[in-house]
Amino acid sequence: MRKRTDESTPGDRRTPREQALAAFTALALPVRVSLPSIVTLVEQSRKTHISIASSSLLNGTEICGLWLSRDTDDLIFHVETDSEHHRQQIVCHELAHMILRHDEVTGPTSHGVLGADSLGIAFGRSDFRDEFELAAEALADLLTGAIRTSTKEPAGFEGVFG
Image 1 (tube, rainbow, N blue to C red):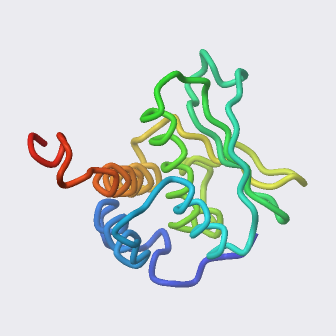
Image 2 (image 1 turned 60 degrees about the vertical axis):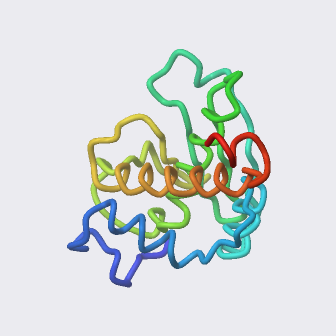
Image 3 (image 1 turned 30 degrees about the horizontal axis):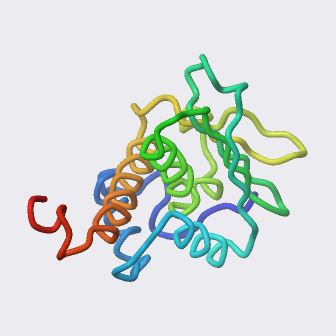
């Protein structure tokens, strides 16, 4: 794991929402964006492959999403859900941790690290009371909002009746 040395360290004085907005703005997303295009952007930024899969092992637990950061790739697991919007929010939350580079921040395990071993570091989406989780959730909201906004057709029903 690399230590993070830029301005977004645990001593960062910006609020989680400000951190999320700064990261979102820095992405410079195109007008038309989708979950796959965000995944591709994050893969290019991290120079790694991201795999996303549902896991029945998460069903009935407090964790609805899990990111495993490994040296060779990143894995995102999410609870099984029939709601595409719920799945999208969970995946965007884990992608937000990657965008915010939370795997490069060293510190106490209270920021969402579930465990570290030779496989990598796991971050779970369950508790939103710390600054890392709040920032990731705020960025996930911005990402999913961008996806929703870019899929609306101006001449369609949503564009007229909103």
